[in-house]
Structures are given as C-alpha cells and as structure tokens.
Length: 371
Image (cartoon, rainbow, N blue to C red):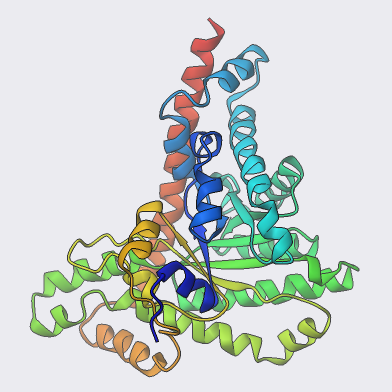
C-alpha cells in the first residue's frame, strides 16, 4: 500500500528520517527547525566533510573565529569549539523530538577526530571529551567501525555514552559491531547504569558500495554484469538488516532487553544517489523496514518528499535474492571482501583528509585574525 505523503509514509513504516547536514547558517536561519516542523526530520548527522564545507563557506563563523583568535587558542581547540557549538545548538532544536520519543529520536551526531580512528585509547578519550563538551542528553558520539574502534565502542557504551557507529560497509564488520554493542551494554549493566538511558545506532553506508561495484561491472562489459548494476548496495544493506533481526532474537539481547535496553538501530547512511541513471530515491524506498534510520542529504529528502513511492516494507522477504546478488558478483570475479575493506580504509582516509583541510584553513584564518 502506498501513502500520498511519502515522508509520512516513511515514518508510519517505522523509518526515522534524519538530515545528513549541519551548518551555523542552517541553524541561525531556522532551516533545521523548519525541516523538523514540516518535513518529519527527527535527527541530524554530521561528519568532518560536512563541517569542513560549513566552516570554510561564507561568514557565519567569522565572529566566533575572531574571538578564538583573540583568546589565542590552538587550532584543535578552536575546531572543537566551533563544531560543538553547532552540535549543542542542534541538540537544543531537536530536544522536543527527543523528549517526545523518550530518547529514541531527536539525536545529533558528532564524530571523534578521524585521525584517532586506529587508536583505541585516544578514541575513547576523544569520545569522553565530546560527551562532556556538548553536554546534551540527545548527543550521539560517532566512532568509526575500524578494528581499533570496536573496543572503544564497547568501552564508551559501558560508561553510558551514546554511540553512533559509523563507516560500516561489510557484513563481517557489522557482526563485530553487534558483538561490541552487546559487550558494552553488558558491562554498562554490571557497572550499574540504567540501560533504558543508553542509545546507539549502527551506520551502514550504502551508495559507495554501488559506486565501487558498478565501476568493476562496467569494466567487464557483459550483459550479465550490466544486469547487476545498482544491485549490490541494496542487497548488502538488506542482509545487514537480516543480521539485526537475528541479534535481537538472540538470548544475549533478550536478557538485555529485559533489563530495559534499547536495540542498536540500523542506520542507512550515504543515501544520496551518485549515478544519474538511477532513481534518486532508491536508497530510501528500497530500504524501508521497521526500526531503521535513514539519514539523507537535503536534496534526497526533498526528492523523497516530491515523488517517492514508499512501500510499507521493502526489506522482508528479500534476503534470498540479496544473498544471490552477492553470490553472482563473486561468480563474475568481483571480490566483495576486497571492496568493502577498501571502502572502509578509504572512508576513514577521506574524513581524515577533510579534517586536515579544515585544520589548515582554520589555522590560516586564526593567524590572519591575530594580525
């Protein structure tokens, strides 16, 4: 059954709509508040690339940068003051949603310094610092799902810090993230934390998988390869949802649920369609299932609102076909493990590069402001 208002249909199907963007201008001009009021937006995600674009564009940050320069703070401190100011403001905008949903939605995410992605101890320290700096109950601290991030995820959850696990591409890594989540909650329970106050999402990146796979399919140039274009990412995400269902049915989770815990919800990230030949809402409409988050760039959000045809559920019943899709890619010589491993490595590197670019730009701006 289809509903005439696509965004209403998504929320009624159990999908939380989050915006994958944040800037000082969006906050000061009321754009975020309007999206919350009018477009069913119930959360916000950020990353180093988003902040690099926001801070280096326009003059929205000029006054704060000048004040930071007068205080002679170093560039890393300045960067954290700029980003946490925006996130704190966004948390306040989303606070009514947080209260209305008992903490499930109304969330704003901020990422740990990506340069720490392969350093467990520094990631934990950074997550603690962000949790303290923002000081809002509806914050999610983003930790990349690199191997060294897994114990950091468990440690932070064990302390009662709400976590958004980010940069997931592989089913194998997702299994490890599920284990880290369960470990963290079990330790939190043992430490005396109220599990009802701990929330987490696991961000599974979608469109980048198709970009990488389709490049290899195009090089093959066969009819069989062409038939598989645009199929890998959705198949991968659907199988991730199958893993989610398996873990919430398991004994470890059921024991935590009886203690008041909330499940770690799957979050579909990177849902903007890169290939102009594809429907621009496919990473939304083909991944509708209860209890998921879909975080969208604003262009995708408007496309969904304008012309998406949203089913009640487009995931259940698809698991055999999804598995067959990945198997067929293997038959064609496309190495799934190599692709998702490379995507994870490149994803961390891309955020690292964005952070370095932003640091260099801000350092020069601070220097000029001190003259």
